[in-house]
Length: 92
Image 1 (tube, rainbow, N blue to C red):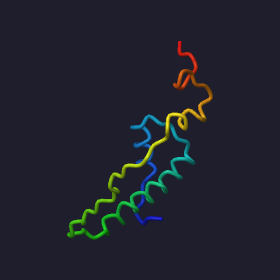
Image 2 (cartoon, rainbow, N blue to C red):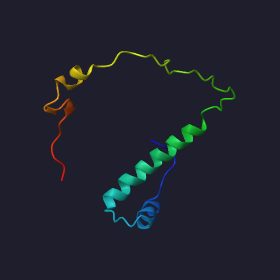
Image 3 (tube, rainbow, N blue to C red):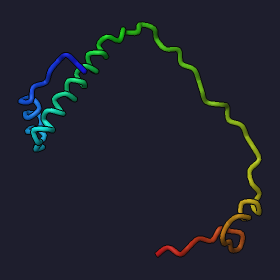
Protein backbone atom coordinates (compact mmCIF):
# COMPACT_ATOMS: atom_id res chain seq x y z
CA UNK A 1 0.00 0.00 0.00
CA UNK A 2 1.30 3.41 -0.89
CA UNK A 3 1.67 6.40 1.39
CA UNK A 4 0.39 8.55 -1.42
CA UNK A 5 -3.32 8.99 -1.09
CA UNK A 6 -5.85 9.41 -3.83
CA UNK A 7 -8.92 11.27 -2.71
CA UNK A 8 -12.43 10.03 -3.38
CA UNK A 9 -13.02 13.26 -5.34
CA UNK A 10 -10.17 12.35 -7.69
CA UNK A 11 -11.67 8.90 -8.19
CA UNK A 12 -15.07 10.41 -8.94
CA UNK A 13 -13.44 12.85 -11.38
CA UNK A 14 -11.68 10.02 -13.26
CA UNK A 15 -14.89 7.99 -13.26
CA UNK A 16 -16.79 10.96 -14.66
CA UNK A 17 -14.19 11.38 -17.42
CA UNK A 18 -14.59 7.70 -18.25
CA UNK A 19 -18.37 8.04 -18.00
CA UNK A 20 -18.51 5.28 -15.41
CA UNK A 21 -20.83 5.48 -12.45
CA UNK A 22 -19.46 4.14 -9.18
CA UNK A 23 -20.98 3.35 -5.82
CA UNK A 24 -19.41 4.87 -2.73
CA UNK A 25 -17.93 1.47 -1.88
CA UNK A 26 -16.29 1.31 -5.32
CA UNK A 27 -14.95 4.86 -4.91
CA UNK A 28 -13.23 3.88 -1.66
CA UNK A 29 -11.87 0.64 -3.13
CA UNK A 30 -10.56 2.34 -6.28
CA UNK A 31 -8.96 5.15 -4.26
CA UNK A 32 -6.83 2.53 -2.49
CA UNK A 33 -6.07 0.76 -5.77
CA UNK A 34 -5.04 4.01 -7.48
CA UNK A 35 -2.62 4.64 -4.62
CA UNK A 36 -1.09 1.19 -5.19
CA UNK A 37 -0.75 1.84 -8.92
CA UNK A 38 0.96 5.17 -8.29
CA UNK A 39 3.31 3.49 -5.83
CA UNK A 40 4.22 0.91 -8.47
CA UNK A 41 5.10 3.71 -10.90
CA UNK A 42 7.26 5.35 -8.25
CA UNK A 43 9.16 2.07 -7.83
CA UNK A 44 9.86 2.06 -11.58
CA UNK A 45 11.64 5.40 -11.16
CA UNK A 46 14.07 3.65 -8.81
CA UNK A 47 15.31 1.29 -11.51
CA UNK A 48 18.80 2.43 -12.53
CA UNK A 49 19.50 3.35 -16.11
CA UNK A 50 21.56 0.85 -18.05
CA UNK A 51 24.39 2.37 -20.06
CA UNK A 52 25.62 -0.89 -21.61
CA UNK A 53 24.38 -1.69 -25.07
CA UNK A 54 22.99 -5.21 -25.25
CA UNK A 55 24.98 -7.71 -27.27
CA UNK A 56 22.81 -9.19 -29.98
CA UNK A 57 23.01 -12.91 -30.55
CA UNK A 58 21.47 -14.71 -33.50
CA UNK A 59 19.15 -17.31 -32.02
CA UNK A 60 17.96 -18.64 -35.36
CA UNK A 61 19.30 -21.97 -36.51
CA UNK A 62 20.72 -22.36 -39.95
CA UNK A 63 18.38 -23.65 -42.62
CA UNK A 64 18.75 -27.34 -43.10
CA UNK A 65 17.34 -29.27 -46.00
CA UNK A 66 15.45 -32.40 -44.98
CA UNK A 67 13.61 -35.00 -46.93
CA UNK A 68 9.86 -34.35 -47.06
CA UNK A 69 6.95 -36.73 -47.22
CA UNK A 70 6.36 -38.71 -50.35
CA UNK A 71 3.15 -38.16 -52.23
CA UNK A 72 1.64 -41.37 -50.86
CA UNK A 73 2.75 -40.58 -47.29
CA UNK A 74 1.13 -37.15 -47.51
CA UNK A 75 -2.17 -38.60 -48.64
CA UNK A 76 -2.10 -41.53 -46.23
CA UNK A 77 -4.02 -39.78 -43.41
CA UNK A 78 -6.29 -37.70 -45.62
CA UNK A 79 -9.96 -38.41 -44.94
CA UNK A 80 -10.61 -38.40 -48.67
CA UNK A 81 -8.47 -38.20 -51.77
CA UNK A 82 -9.18 -38.30 -55.46
CA UNK A 83 -6.80 -38.77 -58.37
CA UNK A 84 -3.80 -38.23 -56.10
CA UNK A 85 -5.11 -34.99 -54.52
CA UNK A 86 -6.68 -34.14 -51.18
CA UNK A 87 -10.44 -33.98 -51.42
CA UNK A 88 -12.14 -31.40 -49.22
CA UNK A 89 -15.75 -30.60 -48.50
CA UNK A 90 -17.61 -28.57 -51.12
CA UNK A 91 -17.45 -24.82 -50.59
CA UNK A 92 -20.49 -22.82 -51.56
